[in-house]
Structures are given as structure tokens and as C-alpha cells.
Amino acid sequence: MDYYVIFGITLAISGGLFTWITANWWQDVVSESETQYEVYSPTPFFRFVLPFVQMMGRSLDKGKVLQGLRNTIGDRLVHAGRSLVISPGEFIGYMFAWGAVIGGTFLGLCAIALGDLPGLSLIIVAMVLSTYFPLFLLSKRVKARQKLIQKILPYTLDLLCLAVEAGLDFTAALNRIGENLGTNPLGDEFRMLGQDLNMGKTRPEALRDLERRIGLEELTAVVSALVQADELGASLGPALRIQSEELQRQRFQRAEKKAMQAPVFMLLPMVGCIFPIVFMVIFTPIVLQIIDIMATL
Image (cartoon, rainbow, N blue to C red; front, side, top):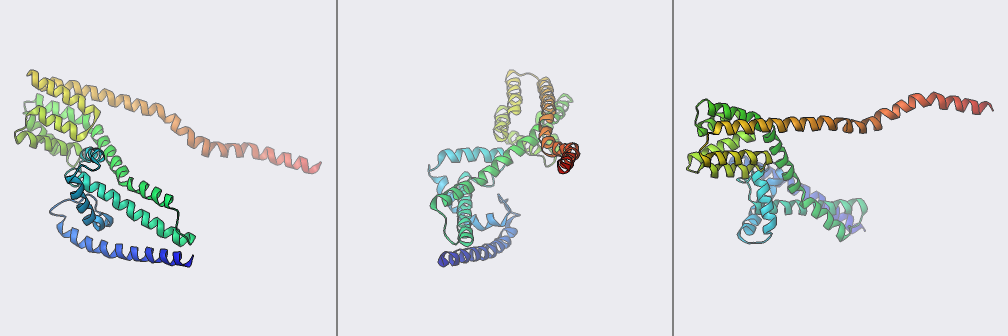
């Protein structure tokens, strides 16, 4: 029993010291090279496991191991706008590093708190759940990015339609709108679309690549309409106008849906917070009177 406690305390202290020392070392190393390349995560933990992540990424990207998982992670990295920062194999290495660290921490904490090592099944469950935690964060990043693009897409299509109808070329209009959008994800995608067109890609190919990078359902209809108009030789202005009006209608419908859901969401705080206080105010005097009557009998 004492051996497990000593083992747990030693594991926790040595792991904490080693992580702190290595994190400070990687802080100095990465801070000097951040001007040359972008890291996936600026946290000290990612910098600490970066050599393992790169080594495992090189091993997985060369073979066919976990091909389905790598394809799924690759699509999510593209939709999150991080495909140029980390490869799917490196991301899987990052997931394994999370699982190993959380599993070891869980082992040490159980040894300290309980004075004994936990069962193998608990360790496996903790490692599996923690392994998929980076994938969960990646999915949240994808949804947040798509939500930002979905919010600004109707307004951007209005600007693009006005620029095209005013006489600007499609590529020039994209560059102008990309500059006005600033750091918004859609602005980055429009600038990348303009670069693809300048590098010689055809407009349908560049638009399909834009659709693949964003992965938004509303954008699929817009890209299909623009590709069809380009293939038929029609003007892009009317097509952009129709798609912009359709996106505005869908946005209004989503707002109506959320407004109709508001009473349902308000019901829970009312039942949990307001109704008990109202019942206390109403029934407390009645209960006190009943207690007084019972005491006089």
C-alpha cells in the first residue's frame, strides 16, 4: 500500500517538473521560429509533445494504417482551415499523446488519493476518452468557423453581386471583397480563391476547391449555380443576386426558428429558479398558520 502511494507521488512530482522544464525549453525554441511557420496549438503541452507528434506523423503518413481515421481528420482539418499546419498523421500522434499523458496522470492521482493503483479497465477508459478529446476540440473549431462563414455569407454575396454588376472582373471583385473582410475566415477563403484563379485554375475548379475547403451546405448551392452559369456562358450578376436573396431568406427562417425555440429554453430556468421562490412566497404563510393551529390543539 505504501509502495503505491510513494510511486504515485513520485510520478506526479517528476512528471510535473519534467513537463515544466520541457515546456519552458520549447517556449524558447518555438518563439524563435514562429515567424517562419505556424504551429497547430501555441500551448506548452503541444510544444512539449511536438517531437513525438512529428515522428508519429511521418510514420503514419507513409503507410496505410488508420486510413479511414486519417481521411476523416484530414477533412476536418481542411474545414477548420488548419490543413497546412498539421497533417492527419501528426494529429493522430497528438491524440495519442493526450491519451498517454491523461492516462498517466489518472494513474498517479488514483495512487495518491486511494493508495492503490486503479483497475486496467478504468485506465483504458480514461486513455480512450482523453485520446478523442483533441478530435472533439477540432470538431468544435470546424463548427465555429462554419458558423462565422454562414453568418457573413449573404452579406458577402451582396457585395460580390454589386461589384460584378458594377463592371469589375470576378477575380478583381474577389480580391476587393477579400481585403474588406479582413481576418474573417470567408475573407481568407476568397483571397485563396483569387490566388487559385491567378495561378491558372479554371473558375469551376477553383470554386469546387472553395466548396471542399469550407464544407458548408449553403455554399454548395451557390457554387453549383456559379459553375452552371459559367458553363452556359451566362452573366454571373443575376446568378449571384438570386443566390444572395435565397441565403437571406434562409437566414430569416433560421432567425424565426430560434425565436420560436426561445420559450422552450426559458421554461427550464423558470421551473428551476422562479417557480420555487413563488411557491415559497405563497405557501410559507399557509404552512406557518397550519403549524400554529396544530400547536394550539
